[in-house]
Image (tube, rainbow, N blue to C red; front, side, top):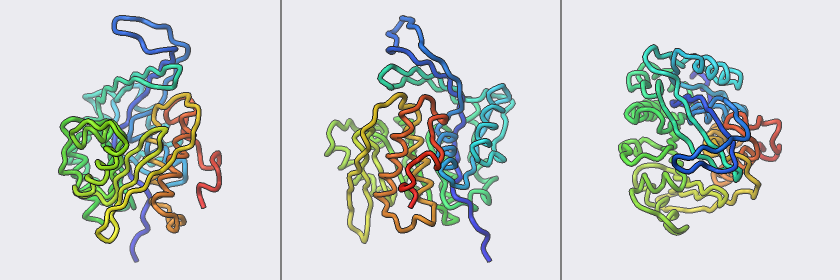
Length: 317
């Protein structure tokens, strides 16, 4: 009898957020006064793991922190959210990743990320944890660790029939395209869509074309998130490409930091929850966008992700 699988494993980054809220972004050489400051756990990998766990997914993370004050803080926060942290290593040579974030009164953000120990997550680490990766239904990767490590983790997952979900964020100009054939679900925002297609896209039709074209590089599903404008879902069924447009709820944003990670973590939950097998992919994307729209109404990153019991019960039936 085959062992039962966990839901989601995140192979990715752990970053400590240092967030300043101010009326507007400073101009070069200018100092502006902040209205509020908060420090909290972040990193695209950790964010997505917490988002999935808060919705009820059995979630683990493979990552690395530094031997500094931020390392234990982030491991403890992940554990409190219900994420398995047994495969988070501590580096003796690099600091925990940090993100210095400025949030304007409009809820927009500007971020400087220093990845530190995250860049030490390696292909060897993926190989060491092959059996752990194989024990999950879905693996979720991003771009805040070494791309070759991502590629190896996705290859291992594919070999074991684990669904592969790649969110190439933040966008990189030199993305390793050999990752795409090992990707089942590819999710990009507008900026990342431009990086991955290597062209400027200025129209709705341009993003639709990009989503459909990316299916030719291997993914079974391509999602382009468009912020308040919703999302595009491109898929191939019976050899025919299909495109769906998903609307997002209109809300007043307080802080958009981490909204994309909330979307990806929520979608990973919906893709692995066997009780929701009757729900179409497009509806799972819509529900993920709705949950992300809730997160932007609160300050912070992981602290803005709501547990299942605080969300509309209709999202989970």
